[in-house]
Structure formats: structure tokens, C-alpha cells
Image: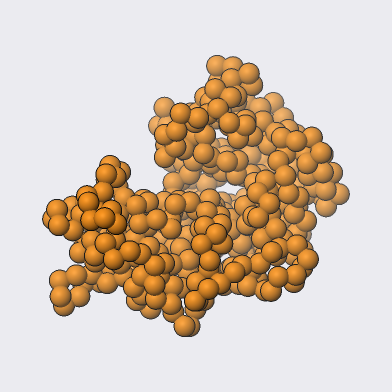
Amino acid sequence: MLKNWRAKDTDFETTDKTLVLEKPLVATSLFANIGIGTSLVEKATGIKVAIANEYSDWCGKAHRRLYPECKMIIGSISEQPIFDQVVAESKKAGATFVFASPPCQDSSSLNTADSKGTTERAKLFDPTLKVIKAVGYKAGIIENVSQWLTSHPKKALDILGDKTIGEYVIDDLHKMGYKTRVGILSAADYGTAEDRERCFILFWKPELGDWKFPKAHKFRPTVFEVIGRLKSLEAGEVDPDNRWHYGLPLTYEKIKFLAHTPTGMSAWLNSVLYQPKNKSGSTSEGSFKQGYRRLDPSKPAPTITGGNGSIGDLSSVHYGRPLTNGCYSDARVCSILELLLLMGTSADFLDPLLAPKGFDGDFEGLHWKNGMLISNDESLVRKALGEHVCPKMMLALLSTFPGDKTEKKVGK
């Protein structure tokens, strides 16, 4: 069914474009997380994200620290007071554009839980559409996992009827008078060293003209191009030159089988002696054969998930370099710095979170021990990073936005 949602050749621009705005646009960001997806927007365009909404208290407070001039409203837009505040503040700020990335857990193929599709998150497409209608934005971008388009969650059957989420959302946007374009695109085709494939719904008022997807770049950035020059680290080591670059500690057993895992390969393909084992030394019962896999430095990284701090997650382990003893270096998961670079945001993006507690009277700050984040803060940061929208992907989509005019980019 996903094949029916993939963009056609006619949905793409045939030349490279750049966004030129005669006056700045004000935007709202729904499900903003900590603002990774919009981290390059204000730097590279005339779009200012003035209002943001996020359900997670920690992410919302971190967003306030990272974007002090943006009004962050913490809470779920499924709750009337939060919904009303988001609408009122968006109107007050004069927002005409919206970014929306509803939670994907109830549609993701990685979610195999029995509770999939039964939580309130599965219905959040509905208040998203209601915010769009209430504010009356001129245009926007909705992002989610590709399976979201064909999802038909139990919790939302009273809203969807026989329609999938994709069908319902498109129909509702058309009823509001918007034109739409839908496609499944990878950030790797737009300057990002992460092969993160997501669905994107562009919607806009007809008077703006037409809005096509950007032309894909000729080359895909590789893991090595982006992180290959960073300091090599083993588990437990810290780079004194960058606070975000350190190797999370691992047990001896895990270091041993990772050290014997070749670049781009899974530890499950090692000889039995060096396959994943428990602390006791017994063979691991893990059956997820895509886990315990080193990155391939000659390709973009696979999708970075919220479990990126675990060596058993999808390709979270550093690619490693061959050593003279037959083993491979960097037996560890990728550092926070490496993740930031792979997903395409700036290396210093998280630096504002380093300010001491009480800096703004809200964010509780991060806690460090022996040059690393303490376990709880490490988990919070990595979970937020795993739920990112690739910022260069957003810039690419905005490059063809017809809000004022687009023109051919010089020198590309």
C-alpha cells in the first residue's frame, strides 16, 4: 500500500531551488521535541518559529533553553486548554506556517507491542488538523514514519471510519481548501548522512502557486565523510576537546565481541566465540539479528532511533577501524556528537543546555560525572535525538516553498 503514496517524477522540481522571502514568515511547531528539525530554519531562511508545543515536560523545557525567543507551550493539544493556548498564541504571533510531527510509535514498524494502535497518541493527527483549521495557516509540513499513511489504529476508528490516517488527513486538508503533495523521501538524498525515510505532506493555499518536492542531490553523504575525522574512542573514554564526544562504558564481555566485529557487519556473524553474550558468559538470547551491527562508513547511517544508546539497537555501533591484532577499534555506540553530525544538525546545537541550573528558572540542567552525562540525562538526550526530524531535509523542502518566489540556486 505504501507504493501508492510514493511521489511521482512530476512531483519533483527538475532544477535546484532556493527560498527567497520578501518578508519573514512566522511559524508554529507542533510536537516540537527539542527543536532539532527546525534548528537550521531560522539561520538559513526568513522563517521564524515563534510558537512551539511539546507534550514532554523535559523536552519542552530543553526547547525553551535552546530557543529562548520562542514561546514553548508544554502539554498535549488533545487537551482543550493547551489546544486553545496554541491556537491563541499562534494567531497573536501572526503565524502563517506550521511544522507538525505527530508521534509515530503507534504506526512504526519497529513497534511490535500488543498495545500498538491503542494509545491516545494514535489519535493526535485529529487535534493537529483542528489546530491547522483554527489558526488558518497558509501552508505547512506534516512529517511522520511512512507507515503512518497506511495506519488504521484501533484507538482512532471512531474518527477514521474506513479510511487510513493518510487518507483522512489528505481529505480533511482538501476540505479546508488546501492543495497537498505527499511523498516518502529519505534525508540521505538531501545532504544528510542518515538514510531516514519519512513521509512528508506539503499543504498550501492555492493562491500561493505550486509546491513541489526538491530535486534530490546527486550524492549521498557517507558516515565516514561526516564523523571520520573525529577522535577514535573506546568504551569509557572521553574526548577532552569536545564535551559531547565520549564512549559510553560497556562490560568486558560486550567490548570483547564488538572488538571482533568487522566494519559494517553484525556481531551475530562472528564466530560463536565472539557472538553476543550475557555478563555471565552465556550466549545472548537476543534474536534481533539487525542489532549489534557496526555502521558501514561508505554509506549513510541507517535510521537513528531512540534506542541509539544500546549496542543491540539498529546499527548504533561505531564502524571501527582495523587494528594490527585483528580486532577493530571504537567498540562502542556512537557518541552524542556523532549522532548530531549524522542527523545533520550543528555540533554545538546542545551547548545551551550546559548552562548551570537556574540559568532561566525553568530547565533543570544536565548532570555530569567523570566527563559523561549521568545515566538518566544520557537517556533523556538520546531519546530526544532519536525522535528527531532531519534539519537539512526541512531546509530542502522549504527551498521550493512558493510563499513569495523561488529562483534557481546559483553555483549548484
